[in-house]
Length: 140
Image (tube, rainbow, N blue to C red):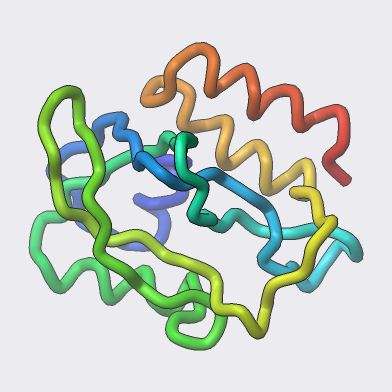
């Protein structure tokens, strides 16, 4: 969710706005290489739940391929199309979902990784942001 990180990865972006994905929850079950016991963000189907994030309007449709190498797609994550809400509008967008081979239960985010998510504060509701801040108590 960190806009500076997106820019540093070379993506050309026209705009960024907050968005919600209904029926999914944010989890940290994608195994990270280090520190031991940490996981990266993933989304998991969860009826009645939602996750928030940043919707980036890319300068060109091909810009998304630049993210594939950072997400190690298709090895670690698969790129999926989902219907998200941007305000009252439904929008189709890409997201990354961790592949089953790299999932592990009981992981927490690293504190450094969590800070990248918290950098998305301007795009998140106060309640969702505060739930992420609470993860500082368990991050490694």
